[in-house]
Amino acid sequence: MRFHREGNTIMLTTGLVLLALNLLAYFYLFSDNPVAIGLLLVVSLILFGLVVQFFRVPTRQLTQGELQVIAPADGKVVVIEETTEHEYFKDRRRQVSIFMSPLNVHVNRNPISGIVRYFKYFPGKYLVAWHPKSSTENERTTVVIQTKNGVEVLLRQIAGAVARRIIWYVKEGQPVNQGEEFGFIKFGSRVDVFLPLDAKINVNIGDVTRGGVTVIAELPEA
Image (cartoon, rainbow, N blue to C red):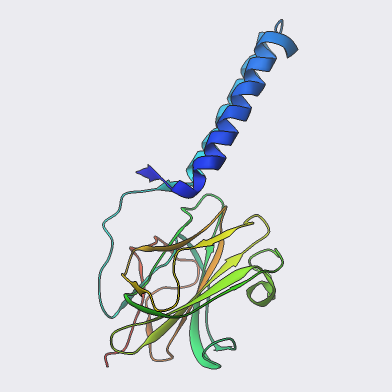
């Protein structure tokens, strides 16, 4: 396991602030109260541990398959439905949405290999991720990857009430490989995947996914 570079500044700052607070408490604030010092130390360690786990990147054997669509994120499947995608496709698609809690790994991975045909970032609100309007009003990005067979899959990173920053590492025209990182959502939220109507969905509502590992769908052969 390693820790993601997006967390370096936050982890260092949190550690230094908590260290300074504990030293201040030990030498000045609670110098005659060992119980208070001990309680503050325990709370500080728990808080630092929570921050550190946000940025963990576990070592995994990633799934590879040309027709397999791999989960772009760790989390829970909260939406599986046929819907109209209005931004890019402007037609009916199969949508699979994965909710990332603050306890999940926050790396987002390419579900397929191909070429990035479309990318756009939208600033916006920070409604809770399961709010019906979060997919159109929250801060978000849209990425469309086209496979070598011409099939396009759309990914949408959506910030939530806790997640306040979306990171992306892709741009239009860039070739990407299945399982590689395409982005990061600090402190969790949601990733939507829009698939062709004839894609076979391999997950159910409530299933827990592992980014880069779980096969959420299979694309039709050309």
